[in-house]
Amino acid sequence: MDRDEILERMITRAAAARRFGDWADVLSNYAACLKKIESKVSLSEMEGLISAGADFYRTLARAEDYRRSSQRSARS
View 1 (spheres, rainbow, N blue to C red):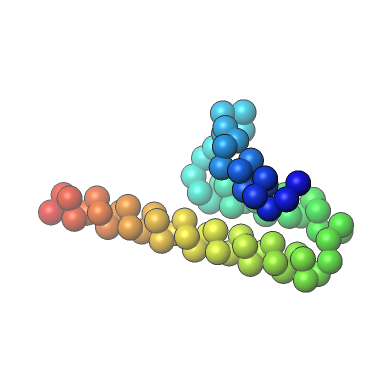
View 2: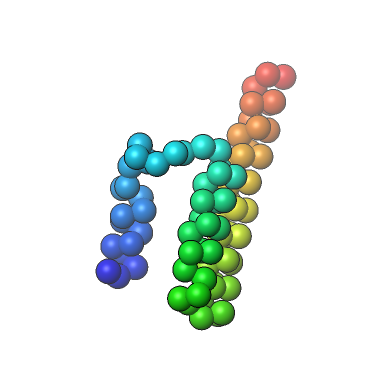
């Protein structure tokens, strides 16, 4: 599977079969997945996956902050 196929599968996969909670739950699930494969990847690969998770977290946190700010502005 190439990068584009992986990306397509992530975007199009339905979440109905999995518990989809708050973004913190999603990030926790990602960390659990990393823990399962930790012994199968190199240290540099693991660092790359952790960095991708950190980028994902920061993007979600910014989106959540923007959503909250927008809600406060709308109420004012």
